Amino acid sequence: MGKHCLRLPPVVAVVILLIGITGGSTSAMAGSITYTESDTASGTLGTASFTNALVTISFSGNTSTVSQTSLGFWENDTGTTTVTIAGIGTATFTDAMFAFDNQGAIAAGIGDNSCTGCRGSVMDTFNLAFGSYDLMSAIGPLSGGVFIRPDLSYGTNSGLLNFSSAGATSTFTATTTAVPEPACLMLLGSGVLGLAGVVRRKLSL
Image 1 (spheres, rainbow, N blue to C red):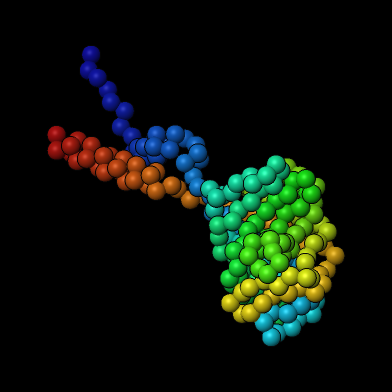
Image 2: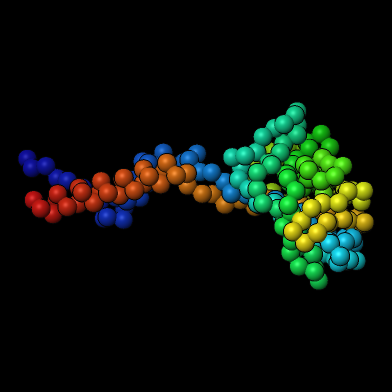
């Protein structure tokens, strides 16, 4: 009795190969993540002043650099932080910035490690959901009471940023994008080349 081989369409074969390489899971994915704080606020950026303007602070980094620096305090201190102020524009922070979640205080936000008088918050949001959040995943938008430090000024490429006041409610959001690890990309390339070799051998028979 002759043997019968199951012939798979090339696309199906590649899908099976991908599943085999990744183990059928997302465990080999590193996550790009952006934490955002927004509220209306008044203050100054360099020589420009603003009043009740929409302010958006964004910290873009990777979940691989999140750590728990103390019990219940999660921090990501590797990334790029910008501030966008309606009517003025966007500036990049030049201080050492960090995103954080303080589970004990049920607060999450953006902070500054190196301004004069710092370490200190730039803008935080209070919400019960932050009592169990660890900065590792997407969340929000979540709104709640705001916390700012009018006594601090933060370095940017447009001059010092200072908030004199802010609206009663701010909003925190975290968004993620899965990115394949380099090692997985190498395995994928090797797998595709191997599949191409198998196809060539079969065609030459």
